[in-house]
Length: 184
Image (cartoon, rainbow, N blue to C red; front, side):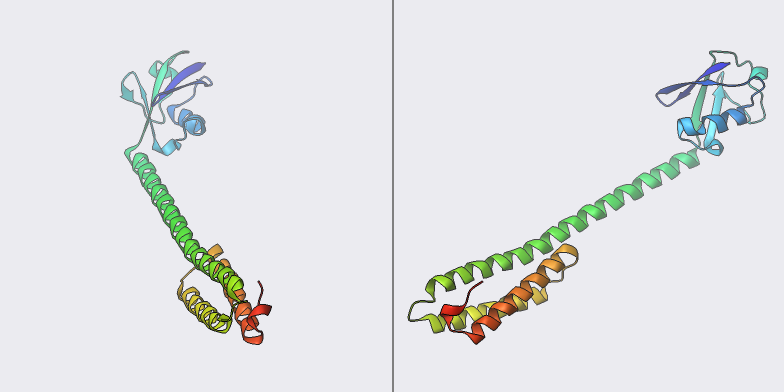
């Protein structure tokens, strides 16, 4: 026979064999309702039915409506799980913002170095280029220290490592050459 299960705002038509108990019905509908059998309360004609009660003996017929309620313990478990999920999502979002801030710090330093390097390239042919070379080396050293002070993880850590290598190469080039020979 087919009975109608009402769970929250959903309705489920379920075929049950003759002689089925309410306990057997709980097991059968657990995957449908998403509520484990031990956390279900089945109500028929306004009363909670015991697991050993036989559906037909309680007056259940084809088309009868049986209400499915969740135990308070199950509701609390779901609430705790939802809260834990929300906290995990908040932590992930916080970590993403932290990672973005770390990456921004590294990229800001990269941008400053790029701008200074471009300026140095434009000025290196002038008479004051030795002074420019010293200032550029000093700036690179400061940026190395700033990068070293950044506490970064993940992708930002890799970007920082690349920038440190790049700055070290630029410093080596500057120390080994005249300003005209320095390139990217």
